[in-house]
Length: 270
Length: 270
Image: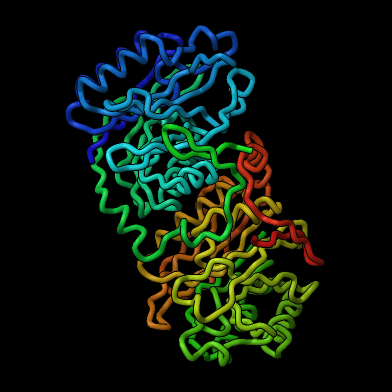
């Protein structure tokens, strides 16, 4: 399976430019790969004081519709972050968009970074969906620093964790170590696309990466903007679990409440 | 704080030689360091088919008594593995021995490697103890491949996780990644002493290591036998938790039952 990590800069609040960058990435690479991962809140830029509502997008609005159309045009799925305008507030959300289903999975960040806790709502569900024989799960930035987030996805059978990332200096190595461990711990692939360049007063760390179910580094980007194609050998999913199976061997469960929906199994945070 | 990682070979069933190696390590280095970490089941060697009872040691027997005396003589704590002969069977156990208390903490491996499941009993408790201002916790080999084991120790306030390891080829890199992530995830030190050389039909991977509460590698050994002194800057415990505190920020708890005893707080596995 061929995927792309779109390590792009973003512009806070310039939704048109951010959307154009995503569409042009799909235009250039969508026919070569099955799936493209974009950074955290790529469409909106980050929420900042006095700039939350004006950057938020409705999931049934024209921007998401254009991405769904591009997904169909190129037969290519994508994971992309945005600020989601919902009935009860704004969320830091990542969408999995597939050619078959449009929005196949919606995930609201469950572990908010200190700066954003006053700005956006807290996600309460961790869920997965099946797509073309694989179980896919989503995480956003700070989520991956907690082994529990990935373990919840692992317990739901995730084969490929997609991380929309907005990680800044000096935390690049922290996310590399975390993402690699999450792949190894759950014997699944992790594909993480980080933002690069500057914005919201931060310098983003780049270093988008992919890790195998054996915990090995498949690819690691530098700090510059670029779209990186990575090949995932799906046979490694079986190979990783052949001699020992962490999910079967673990002794301690997570304190979560099962919460399946029409898209697939999930957990509700208690 | 100065510690030592005793990366030693062991001999299955040759308790006298294994004990001598431990005592001579304490003799040579015990006055220079506060604590020495030895490998998994160092005193006994590994349990093997038809060689379980004959390698098991009573905790109130003469071998442990000699280690307690050496700990007092050198004012040096130690974490050391053995096969423990208990009333209800044999366990893969690690002892924390301190000059003040003798056996300050007993930990029975909670995640048994496939080969040993028919040979030894399964540990049911994860606990910690306070020693000279630090909270110490123990893990044994395969335990560290599960983020839950370390998280349980982290939730009990562990500052320094001591790993008695018996990791073999080709899994050296797996344990390096796991141990490093456990330090970062729980913003604490991890000190891991692995066996080296050959035994029980295996080649042990060495690569004993120590990681900081920031997740950084403080030290990593090669594959050869050696006692490695590592300095732990305890101020890093505060520095790691200054900007964000994972234990405070985590959203998902472990499904464990609190089980404190006279040595300190703990969890019972459910």
